[in-house]
Structures are given as structure tokens and as C-alpha cells.
Image (tube, rainbow, N blue to C red; front, side, top):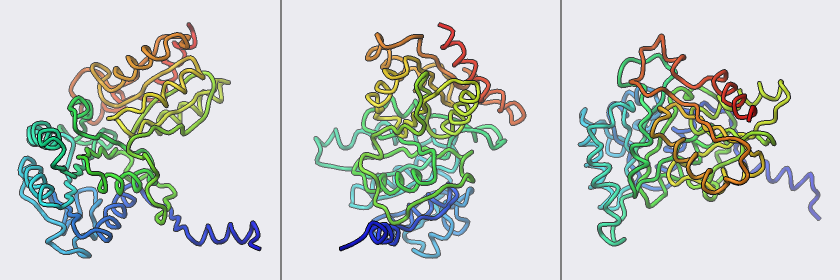
Length: 342
């Protein structure tokens, strides 16, 4: 008869848990997907010999060769257009857009071709393309290198938009995105590339990881909703609130489109208050959609209006001003104070 200790030892033996940087978790997510499926390709500017400007594709060309890790010309529309053609021929391309602000030359290809092929063909065609976009601020970059364009893509039907906040989710969601039959816009919070966390390399992708939000901290008095780079900020704010005697629940959306509104609503029904946080400007953003849906579905449970903390409705500022532009713990605490004052 197997004892509890023996079962625990067997379970541990079947796992391969490592502490990895966020960027390395992404690398291994792609690497393992490429090892499992020869149809998976990586392509983009400087992704091969250099390993990408953030070294996220480091070592992949050496392992899989130049035919599967392709250095492309500096032409984002060409990268995405080629990927669409490859996907239609049975490949699974993973495209890297070097910086968020460089995606716009490919916007036409993404929104008028990639997003619509499946619908246009009445389901006969699939285009399993993953487009990796390092996004957001916090690294002191120059103009066009710190954008948050997720709402522009989320407004387009036919695209999945996801953003992990931890190394394990980065690994898990990358593999799930590559395996998905749908086109995926994979928003990578570049300010989190060097953060570390535990990653179970042996575990299969969690069911629904591209569709479901996750409660990362339980609380009773206010719900903080975030995704990507602002999840860590929300958790710090929750710690500060706990020190003041306020219990905050933190919900990591993970999927921006489709939004897991039932998970958010369930949390708000428990707490009665909600603050939504993202780096993109508050105006016309993902937060506005969350506010609308929560108000529609949990109106009678709300003790205060749903509030937003985001970037300002202005072009992203120069590096020395970006910490005043980005959501901070203090700005979140101020929003929670205003919510509790009702």
C-alpha cells in the first residue's frame, strides 16, 4: 500500500520546478513547443543570432537552426503577412514585434486579415499565429518603446489578447497560445522580464489558462483588478492596505480578450467595491470595459462607483517622467480611499 509520503515523493519526482526569470520562462515555453512540434517557427527582427533585444529567443536558433528561427527584414507588415501565409500552410509561426510601438505597420495585416480569416472562410481556415509584443513602461526607454496598445486589438473580433504577470503563467500561456487554433496577441510586460518565480516545467498548460482570470490574493473589502505589469503593483498596494487594516482582493485578468467577467463579478459581489488598474490610458481602455460590465452585472452589490487607475490621456512621456505617468501604489491607495469613503 502506497503511503502519503511515498505519493508526495512520486508527485515531486514528476515535477520539474525551477526558479526562472520571466524572460527565461518565455524562452522555455517556445523551446518546448518547438521540440514537440516541428511546425512551430519563430520569426522576427534579430530573434536568431542575437536572441532578440531582450534575449527572449536566446539559444533557439542554435538549437533549431535558421529555417525555424528566422531573422526577418525590418518590416512588421512583412513579418505578419508571411506568418499568415505559413499558418495557412499548416505551420504555427510565433512572431516577435521588437517593441510595442513598432506593431502599427502590421496593424492592417492583424486586424483586416489575421483576425478575419477564420470567419471569412466559415471556419474552414485557421491561422494559429502568435504575435509576441513587449509592452508597457518602466524601463526608461525612448519614444515608441513604451506603448500599451492592447485596447486597439481587443476591439477587433477574432483575436485572443493575453498578458501573463508571473514567470509560471508566462511559460504556461506561451505553450497554450502556440497550441491554440486562434490567432493570439501575446502582450509581454517588458518591465517584468527580469522578475523571478517558480515555474513547473513538467506540468501541462492549465485548462482555460487563455480564458480565465485568477484570484492571486483573497480579500473582503475591495477588489483590485489588474493584468500584466500592474498585477505586481496591485499586490504591493494590497500589502500596504493590509498594514492599514483594509482587506483587498487582487484579480489577475490574464486574458484581456475574451474577458473573464464572471470571475471579476464574483469577486465584486463579495467585496462591494472595485478598482481597475492598467498602464494604458484610462480613457477608452480595458478598464472602461470592466467598469461597464461590472456595473451591469453587479450593480446592486456595489457600495461605491467602480474606479480606474491608469495612464494619462497623453503620449507616453520621456523616461524621467514615466514613474509619474504609470499607476503607482500611492495612486491605487488614493482610489481605494475614495471608494471606501462612500
